[in-house]
Amino acid sequence: MKAEAERLAKNCLLYDEFMVREMEAGRISSDQFEDNGGKIWLHGHCHQKALVGIEKTAQMIRGLLPKSTLNVIPSGCCGMAGAYGYDKSHYAMSGRIGEEVLFPAVRKAEGVVLAPGTSCREQIRHFCNVEAKHPIEVLRTIERLKN
Image (cartoon, rainbow, N blue to C red):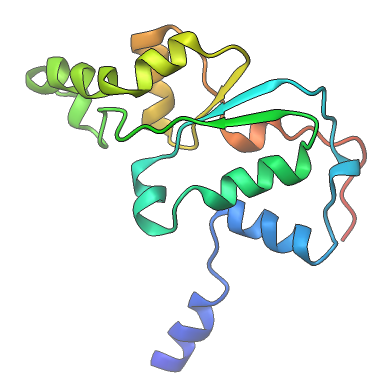
C-alpha cells in the first residue's frame, strides 16, 4: 500500500508544476500561446505558498508569455483564509490583513491581476473592485495543444 501511495504521489502535481514539466519536456511552448506583451501581477495563494511556493507559476507565465512583464506581488495572506473572512466577526480583520500589502498593490497594478486562489480572487474583487483571474485564464492557445 505504501509503495502504491508513493508511486501515486510522484504523479500528483499542481497545475503550474504540470505546465512547467510539459514545457521542459518540449511538449508545450510559448509559440502555442497568444502573448500581447501586457503587464501581469501575480498574488500567490497561501496554500500554494505553503506546499510548493509560487515559483512554478511565475516560471510558467514567464515561459509561455515571454513578451509580457510579470510582477510577483510580495504579499502574504489576502485575509480570507478559507471561510475566515466570510464570518461577520472576522470581516474587519480580514480586510486589514489584505490591506497590509495585497490590496494596495492590486489598486496600483496596471494590467491583469492573477490569483490562483478562489478565496483570494473573491477578496480582491470585494475589497479592490478588481476581477483577478486564475493564472490559467491568461493562457489563450493559438492552436490546439498536441498530445
